[in-house]
Image 1 (cartoon, rainbow, N blue to C red):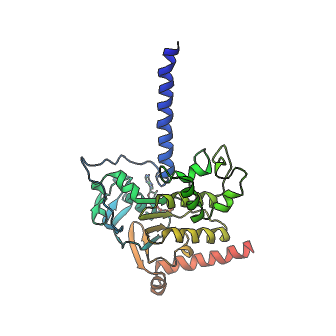
Image 2 (spheres, rainbow, N blue to C red):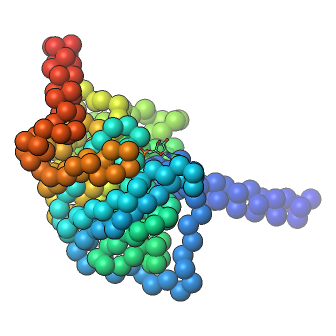
Length: 301
Ligand code: ATP
């Protein structure tokens, strides 16, 4: 009878491993809805990242052929600078991030990193060069230490603690009865949106990628938490090429360039001051959000 069970046991293990793998994928690649099959070309070389210059050249894309979402988008993000993408809901902001991470390939145009077409390099090398802080971080049902250490295989406790400090979540962890060994996730401690985001920032600090994608949460955090998170995000972005998918304009005032996407096209680009002076779509969005902020402040007291 045991002989019958052993293969079953083995099958169970394989099943669990695959399932965990899928969960890990979902957790890390939280930007996805249903990732399409993107395959490496035969003997694709690894991406050689210099300082992380990102370019979108006339990129067109639709999830379905009959509905084009991006209609020839050209972007240039010089190494080590930040670009914020703003615009109405559904404009295609998150889609840009999904293309850069290569969940999908553009239907026309190309995306390059340091001059190399990302569709022609090994996906694993591309993905190890990019860190993502997603809108909603999925936590594993494991310890908080594991959840941070996940950012880099083989990371030791001192590195995990360093990343936690960088993400300003170290004092929170130190105050837990079991510290880094505390269980989180569905069966453990429930973390707030802000705390989860800090775990994601800590993971990314451990990964230490040259390129960073920040997908800002749509759900508003209270303004004090928001400010605190913002300063840790700014610290994480320093020295990296950073693309911020922004919903609140107040968080991206200092970006090196701001791109306003509207219905899949670049409608405006410039710095905050330039765009305000222009009096176009950005200035309109800014005025609307400023009015909303004032209202929130009255409500929050
Ligand atoms: P928001 O500010 O609301 O997050 P966004 O500008 O980031 O919006 P995207 O998420 O890029 O917008 O979506 C652009 C369009 O693509 C939307 O109309 C959306 O419905 C569509 N879309 C997004 N993901 C998919 C998908 N997996 N399959 C089909 N259509 C999709």
